[in-house]
Image 1 (cartoon, rainbow, N blue to C red):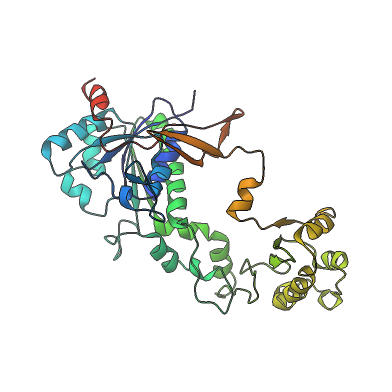
Image 2: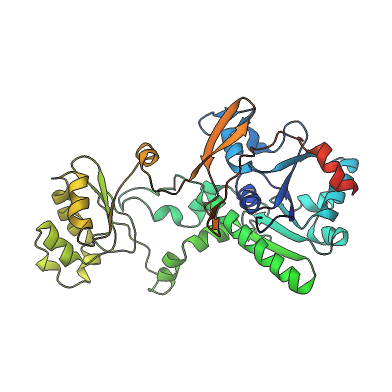
Length: 377
């Protein structure tokens, strides 16, 4: 039995942040019901990655919405809203990521929903919070990365801002929503009352940068300074930290004693005996290391450095990663009509059990009839 079995979650969310939270709750056993507009469903069904579609919905939609049910309802139609309110009366959790003012028009604000279900946990995802000049603006991952300063932490000093190749704001905000919902469920157990949970993309991506922002706030307002050699990996860490090219690939060197690493590489680092220079002179130190590492293949350096306790690792792309066996069984296959879809599983294990589910993302309104029993019960 999974820990959230018996918990009913209504998801009025689209795209990534809110639905990714629903995915995690579903993996933990919750019954997650997507409330979607009829026919077209939520907008992410047509938002594709590399124009990849499976079973009439985008591959992106399938990756985020497996293990859920779908209830089609027109929230501009009074009869459909009445049915939705009956579902709300049966639910434990409700989440939405509508812009400010939308739920007011529908009549499904937190206060409205409390009148229907006084014990509801009501989760809201916004782009920039519910107050201030940005409250009504839609949140989008790249914009949030850019507004938050995050884009200045990757790449080289001489480069323009470099955004992440992942929707990091959305993903982290979804994680924070799950944390907030679980905490709210515990609070409800103690108080017997509903709880409002609010998260925003901007706050989440600022939280991701807590070490960088804390350093800025307590270091005289010094702007993070990226290194300016290939492979510079962290604006606040000293050499040797970074990624280096080898004879046949790339090697990552994490934090370590530079003088000890110099001995192993047969490099004279006596000029950098003072550890403070490992940061102030990190670019020139990295260039010396880079020149040395290009002389042998990755396996050579992994054997030499790894056997001596140096934190290092090969830099794998997805093709190499797919062949590498970590023993984690992270892939799972979903069952779709006429298709098999390979994706990742929930990363959490409980009592030694790996949490997997073969249930694919639903078609629009696929569960309207079966959910009638929940509505009328």
